[in-house]
Length: 385
Ligand SMILES: *Cc1c(COP(=O)(O)O)cnc(C)c1O
Image (tube, rainbow, N blue to C red):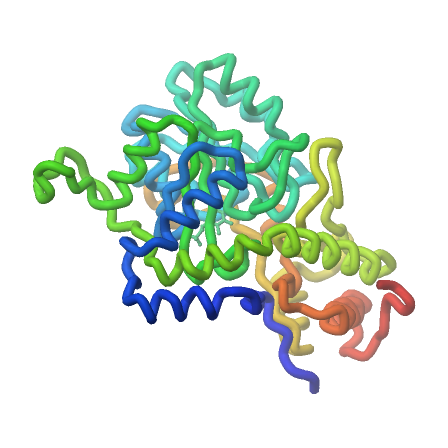
């Protein structure tokens, strides 16, 4: 059998090694090193924001965002049920109340109409999350926020290089966050970033990232923060990666198109939406959803693909179905049918920047054979891509 194709393999063939060697040669390896500030300046400029605050990971960025906006007990924060746990965890840990909305069946992002219906006098913020390749529909969401005086946290962890009606994702929140995990378009191994325009808010984020040490009395604390600092080693990778963001986005779009062609004739699959009038997908990952008449679910399809040497990942599992939140008494009797279906019928294919055309053809061939119910060996997409 051919080699296993992993679900993600990053591309590190630019200046990554050179900048890392620079850290070693100069001895600058901690968060005090010069690449951290360089990454903050270049990344925030790239998304059109005045301030960038580099952190240890994207989940920590959300913790900081919630704390920086002073969201706490009694405050309701509206967010999608279909997302990573980090979003709801940040709200719950702050003692605030997570209020969930279902996903749009086409873009898989939070449905603005449901957001409008869940506003109460206690609503303080909307956490907008962009998922899998297309941004959430920001105009109606921002209009709701404006009308009700709500803060907006924009989780753009998967949206490096994406824009909404020509304006960069990451430029829409009072504070916006990114992740640099290896399956994101820009990686630092582990890492993340907050961006914003308000200098005071940026200062709060910086302080919360650094244990809320004080300049004058260093070890006297007025507030609890975290050690969520990013190291110079991580930032060195990030600076090298950011240099090639445009090429990465182009490559991902090409991969999305290529998969689209290879899989268009395979029965039983819903393929990801390539565009809305506000954006072209950047295919953070290439997700597929099994149609309702397919007699097996995502878990079974993924198991069969694994046996054929293809790595996959399930879609997110909805927040209202998380045992940890149910045990806290949260979301009792809530149902969000779109998210429930996506979680059970959706998964994503190998999508890393190192994946070759030949690799994608093998993935598509394996998926076609799984969909046809055969063991292996069906070829698809002849002549495509
Ligand atoms: C990856 C991701 C995060 C978390 O980032 P980490 O760096 O892995 O902590 C948060 N939100 C979304 C939407 C993500 O995709």
